[in-house]
Image 1: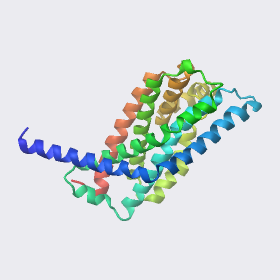
Image 2: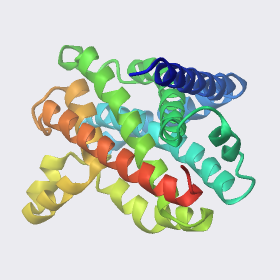
Image 3: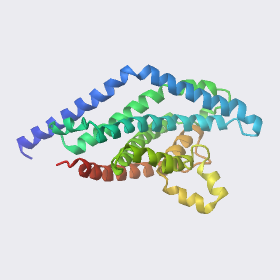
Image 4: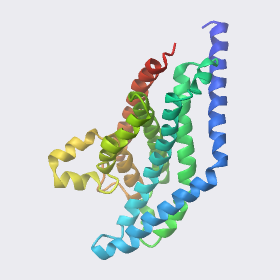
Length: 267
């Protein structure tokens, strides 16, 4: 490797870090309001499923299941919102073209958006977790929680959601198509992802449907979160979920970059 190549690579990396820091730093302006928004939503979901649903015959532990589900789901909501803004930019002003003129590759620009989306979503929603734990304090089994596993699965979940949303944005022609995807297909994927019901229960209801749902990338996000927070029994093996999430992340990243290059005619 020549000195020139080393300098070019260092310049590209420095540009990547600067752009990423610029995007993440912008979160300061809206952090409090977004934290309040997701805190209110988390409290509503947890209170409803912990203190009201048991009167319909649901176990009180269902509130813990919904706590972990909501924490993971909120990642997707933040990222989906940011991806929607990105979709509007690609269709309209295309301010991203400025970034592509900088000494940085289109791949690093693409990765910058994925990292920024993931970091912002994790920062907002991890801050809501202590509130949720307080609400289920009497029914939660602290001995079943693996903080390291949960944190690892949580960070990887944000990466999966980020690459998935970027892939969907560049897959469709415009914002209308992107929004239509979420209404027509995205919500179906979401509802059958283990958000409300563990995979073992869905497989018990229908073996064929259960195996088909293993193709759902979101399934491994919720199963890993539940296994790390509530204990392994009753959920897909935690490390299998981690492996699946890594595979889906790489696939969405590679296909997304290819479509991104074609869509913006990058060099």
